[in-house]
Image (cartoon, rainbow, N blue to C red; front, side, top):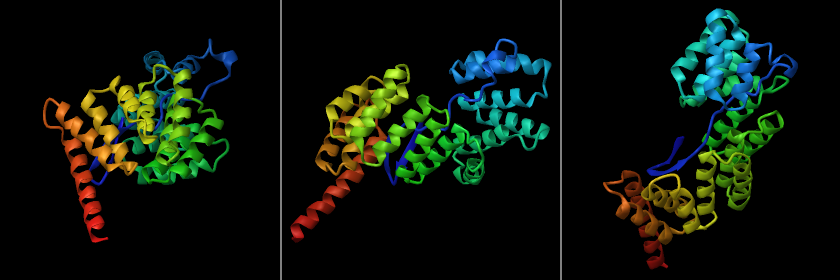
Length: 289
């Protein structure tokens, strides 16, 4: 989960660097190749099994670079950033030009909030053929962080075409579509993704945000309320109402967030303060006309 801040305004959005690994060896060797079996588990999202298989193989073959990079992606998926960095570094010590290890290290930088470090590496990898879906997804995340939502959507579509037809990329594509101002299209994308990946709560969370962006505020409260405390749901809906320039609606939902919170809720308080300031500016302008 990633918090995105716009000045003092805060809402919760889900934007993901990666989850899983799309690289596979030939299916005819899967039953004979423990690394291929581990990568297959990782690609399927069975992270615990993938980790166990990689670790078991590395116990006997500690210098298998493919296994090391696979384990690095497992650790990255589990947000074990320090461990992932160390694993990718070890792989690069063994093979300095290993493409997946270079990619993995850049994605660790991105996951740690160091987009400026990740950007040139991912851009360099993106001109190679074939291009990994993880690289394209990472560039999409960077474009999202830069506010370049149309560019981000292009990266995510390319990631899907490159083999990244999974919940991570579908979620990010829905997020960018919402932030680009096409909330109805985002709702369609996220609902379709939820039909394919019904257990992915991050998809449902962004669906709730997209519903609020489309002005379906009470529907959004119901969607988000299944995933988080009601005061957080009210805060997120209030924030989206503010983005919609419906400041009176935003004020009501943010006040509901504060009223329903069992203790002081600084995010909602900051958002409400921003909305009140915007309303005051509007009032002064109307008086001057």
